[in-house]
Structure formats: C-alpha cells, structure tokens
Length: 385
Ligand SMILES: *Cc1c(COP(=O)(O)O)cnc(C)c1O
Image 1 (cartoon, rainbow, N blue to C red):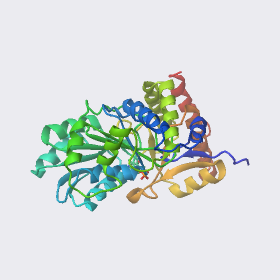
Image 2 (image 1 turned 120 degrees about the vertical axis):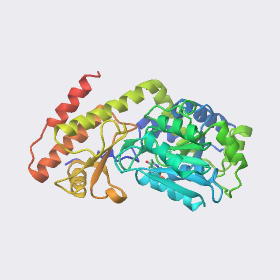
Image 3 (image 1 turned 120 degrees about the horizontal axis):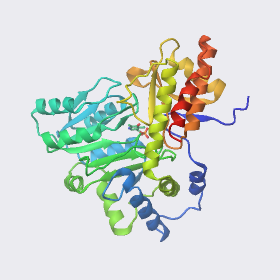
Image 4 (image 1 turned 90 degrees about the vertical axis):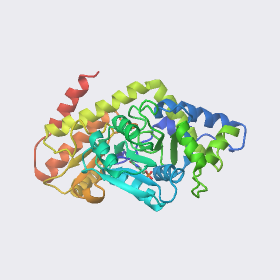
C-alpha cells in the first residue's frame, strides 16, 4: 500500500498548507534588520480580528504551554488567590502552572466531558469569599473536546469579582468567534500548531489595557517570559526582546493571507460544518461520543470506545490507513480517542477519516457499517454547498 501520504487528525499538531510551508522557506532575515519590524507589525495587527483583540497580538517563541505560563507569571504574585476552571487535562495544567508560581489556587472541578456552566462558576466564586486576582478558563478543553461558554463565564467573572479573566484558546483560536472586549477577556493565549495552521513553536498572547496595567505592576520574577519586555520592544522598535522564530512568523503572515481570502466568518462556518459532519457520521454508525452536541467544540471530537480499546483502533487506523488520531489524556487514557478537525481541514478530510473508521470497525469486529457514516456526513455537507 502506498503510505506516502499520511493523514494527520491529531488535535495538534495539525497539517500545514503548502503555501505556508513555502512562506516559511523565505530567506532568513535578521530581526534587527529593517525588514523585520514591518513583518512583525503586519502579523501582530492582522491577527487582531482572529483574537478579537483591540491591541496587537504579542508573539513569543515557545509552545502553547509557554503562552499559558506567560499569562500566569506576568500576573500572579506569591499567595494571590486565583480560580482555575478544570474541565480536563489543560485546565489541570493551567492550575498546576499557577500553583508553581505560588498562587493559592481554587480549582473549580467540572466533570470531564462537560462544559462549565455559568451558574457553577457563580456559585463557586460566591462561596470562596476571597479577593480573587484572576480567573483562568480553557476555551476549548482539548482533552475532552468541549467548548466552554467563555462569553457567559466572562459575564459572571466581572459581575462577581474584580478579577482578571484569562483564557486559554490554544486549540480553538483561528476556528471560533471571540471578542475580548465584548466577552470581558483580559488575556487570551494561543499556540501556533492547532487551528492556526502552523508548526509548533509560536505562542500568541493578546492583552487588553487593564491586564497591561496589572502586568506592569506585577512584582513576580520572570525574564524570558516577561511581557513588559515584549510590549516595550514592540512599541519602541516593532521587534522582540529575544530572537524571534522568524520563519514561523513568515508562515503566520501567509496564514493571515489565507484567513482573509477565505473570510474569517467563513473559516468559523467551515469548522462548524466539520464538527457536524464528524458527529452526525459517527452517530450514524452508533459510535458513542463523549460530549453533547451543545457542549462540543468545532475543532476536536472525543469518541468513547466500548468494544475495542482505543489503542487498538488507533493502531489499525495508523497501520492500515495512515491516519493519525489523538488518544485520551490522564483519566481518559484508553477510554477515548480524539479526532482533530481544525485548521487546514476540509469536508473531504472528514470523509476520509470517517471512511477509515468504518473500515477499521469492519476489520476489528466484522461490524459492517461501510459507507454509513460517510453517507450521513455527505448529507450534512450537501446541505451547506
Ligand atoms: C495543546 C494545548 C496546550 C499546550 O500546548 P503545547 O504546545 O503542547 O505546549 C494548552 N492548552 C490547550 C487547550 C491545548 O490544546
């Protein structure tokens, strides 16, 4: 079998468009040369609508976790009271980061596979009776495939506390709507390798003016991740304090071209369609989903495995059909697999992955559902053409 073409459906890293690869191969430029400032300014400002930000987006070299750490370390001082919504592995990571930097972390634990409801947050915040410095939330909890109601949670944060509202959008920014001002978000972070169609290696941080003031006054020690350095460098010379990942920033510029050509509204709609096709297709072959339609993210779908272990399904998909999916993380390890459908992903890609799942079930169980999920997904798609 020709397995030269490998199909990547992990919830990050995700496939890279050829034109982005080509853009990343441009001759290297020095970040202190006259060319770099216009590149950085172009990317930082053209990403503003994607982040729903009123300020240029700050760009760092680092993975998504460096973006989370940056958000934490520029705000938290020893013994600050903070709240972290933990609905899966990435909420848990945000909480661990805050603990590492000495915060008193109040974890609002949500059942994995569910979103945090605004009432749950409201009750939790009221019950604490503490002066909360920041509330941390995860927009798409990648480990379970839910999309938290960030807008409604933001209303609660600002009604009940004076806290900053800090959001991890690593696995959905570039695929979903967001409006920092309208939704009360003070800091929004993302990484390059999920819905933004880039390789791993860039961290993005959007900051409003209120958060900026807190960051300026924050006494916590930090060096590489000190946002004050990045903001000053951007303001004074449209540059970065340390060597930026120049090639990836060239790539990000091409991603901005692609978003603008497709239209960002359309990008969002495409992801809604991908979600609907995946879910309806899997329901048609009675593969159980971890999340409800309402809670589910347009970027990643978590599938429960009952008959066959997730590992076995993943292995057949990889060995026979060259399809890579994600597994379960932490307490969902072995219980689910996850299909990433974000960034450089089309309805045809969904047909590919559903067809391979049908064949895998036939191969493993003899369960004959060939064509059933694909048919259902095509029915969904054709409604939208
Ligand atoms: C992938 C991801 C991260 C971490 O990103 P890394 O690039 O692996 O450091 C953080 N939060 C969410 C929600 C993610 O999906």
